[in-house]
Image (cartoon, rainbow, N blue to C red; front, side):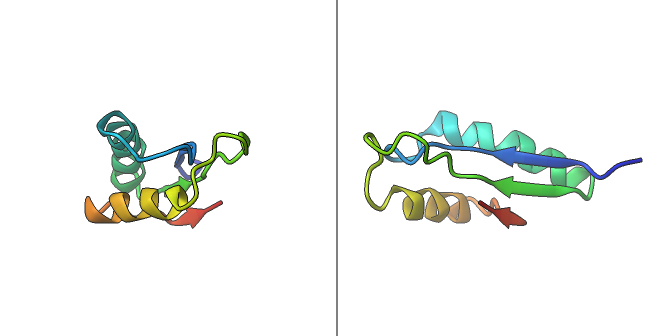
Length: 73
């Protein structure tokens, strides 16, 4: 059986809201339950709308809720 790999891919266009936090929780829980890998992949494809410091704020909020990633892109 192959390893479970899940990801959360927020866009750094502002603060992480409650819906984004919930969207991170499901793949995180599945990865932990399956002893798999949880990946945080910040989708920085829309450079015009990117808010400076939002990548760091996303990481900070996930850490505040003890959602730890295994890989970061």
